[in-house]
Length: 435
View 1 (cartoon, rainbow, N blue to C red):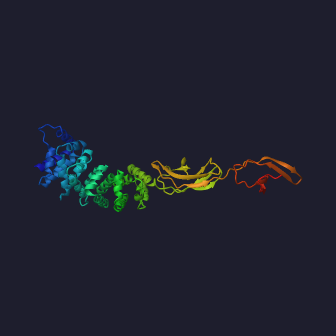
View 2 (cartoon, rainbow, N blue to C red):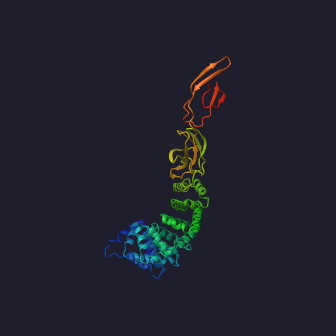
View 3 (tube, rainbow, N blue to C red):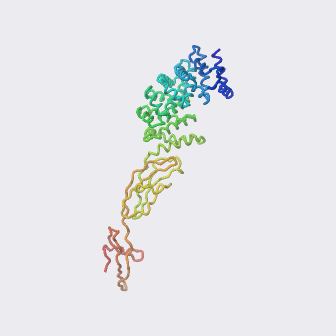
C-alpha cells in the first residue's frame, strides 16, 4: 500500500497542477493535522521492499524539481537523515533506485543551502565518498546525477578542499576521465565536463589539475574529442569547460598540447553556424587560447631620418578578419591601431634609436606583445646651401660658389653634389665650397 501510494503521489507531482497542489497542502507552515509526507517518504527510503524505496526516491526527486519543493525539503527537520538515507542507496544493486537517489542529491545541491547541508553534515565523509564512487560509469544515469552534485559542491574553494581532503584528487580525476571517454551516454560526457568546469572556477581548482598533469592532459584530449560530436549539448558543455580552464595564465599551453584544438574550433564554427550559443563559446575560446600567442617581431623595411616603414606577418589564423586588428607600440607606448599588416612611423627624431612592437587586438581581448625590434633613424639631412651664384663664366665654362649651410645637425657630411639641369655632373669631396 505504501509503495503504491508513493507511486501515485509521485505521478501526481509530475504534473504542474499536481505539484502546485502538493506545495500548497504540504508547505512548511502546514497545520498539525496535515500528514508529514516528507518524513514518511524519508523513512520509506529505509524500507525493506525495493518498490517502496524506488517510488519514495522518485517522488522526492520530483518534488525537488522546483525551488519551492527544494525549500520544503531542505528546511524540513529530517533533511539530515534524508541525505544519509539517499547517499547510502547510491551503491544499491537496483540501478533505478541508485539513479533516483542520485537525482535527489543532484537537485538538492542546486540550492546553496543544499550544498552547505551536505558539506557540513556530521557524516559528510561517508556521503562524499558515496558520491565519488557513484561516478562509476557502470550505471550511466547514476553517474550523470552524481557528477552534477559533485560539480555543485566544488564550485567554491571550501567545497573543493573538503572533497579533496576526504576523497583525494586522484580518485576524482580518474573517475571524470572514464566518464569523458564513454561515448555511449551524452549525459555522462556532459556532466563530467560540468563537474570539471566547476572544479576550475577558481585558481585553486586549476592548480589541483596541474598537480595530476598526465591525467589532466588525458582529460583535455577526451574533452577535445567531444568537439567532434554530433550532439549539440555535448559540444556546448565541452566548449564551456575548456573556456573555463582557458581563463588562467599558462592554461593555453595545456589546452593546445594536442596541437589540434584551433583547427577543431574552426570546424565547429563552419559546421554549427545556426547555433549562436556554440558560435559564441567557440569564438570566445578561440581568442582566449590565442591571447598569449606572441605575434611575430615586425620588420623595418625602410628607415629614413624622420620616418620608417614597418611590416609584420600574421602568425595565426584569425577567427574573423573583420575583427582582427594590430596595435603598434613605439618605445613602450601604444601609438595606433590598424587593420593592415604594415605601417609608416612618422615624425621621428633623426639619429635616434627606437623600439617597436606589435600586439593583436580583438573584441575579446589583446594578445601579449611581440618581441621588440630596434632601429636607428638616419641623421638629419643638411639644409640647402646659401647664396648659390655664378662667380665667373666664359663661353664654355662657369664657376659657381655658395655659402655653406648649418651642418651642426649632420655629423656625417661628406661633400657636395653638383647638378646641371637634372644631371649630376660631379661630386666635390670637400667640407667647404670651392673658391
